[in-house]
Image (tube, rainbow, N blue to C red):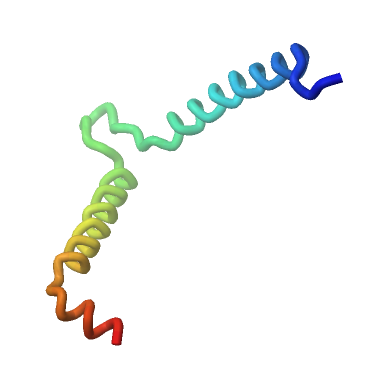
Length: 75
């Protein structure tokens, strides 16, 4: 009796199919919606955008420094 058989293959396929549907639904619910009256994104979407921009800016600033600062930090 092998581990890979038709019954286990069907159970695995069904598990993946149902799992995909559940994950797609959760992902769709997690995305901030747009207010239908004003056509503007809600506040959480704006906050997420601002936080992402700040993170990218700090990463660019940290990586854009001179090479001397990296040499001083390692000694």
